[in-house]
Image (tube, rainbow, N blue to C red):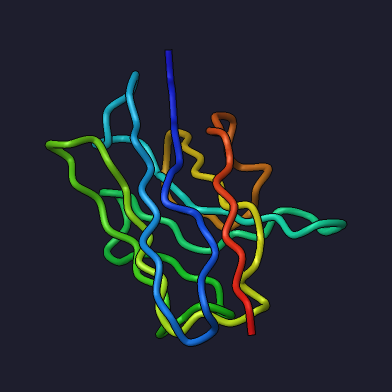
Length: 123
């Protein structure tokens, strides 16, 4: 059974940093893409970053390029999202998701989702 658990969300100051972690089980990273999404109240999920062994480099939303970095630890079965230079617009519930294949930032691509972790950025 595919299981994902996101953690690390909390209140942060604008300009600060947070590191989210997604603990994964029930599948292999070799043939799955793992992505971070976020959802602000009243909005559709937004793809933030994605990583897969089938892609030469991670995929990032324009809104986070240069500020966020996604990384995977295959031995620990975790995928982290390092978030720097946070802005109030980054406030959202953050989710990790996975499915077989290559990366995408479109939420309907992913069938397996974990519980969210709340990030609140105060300005």
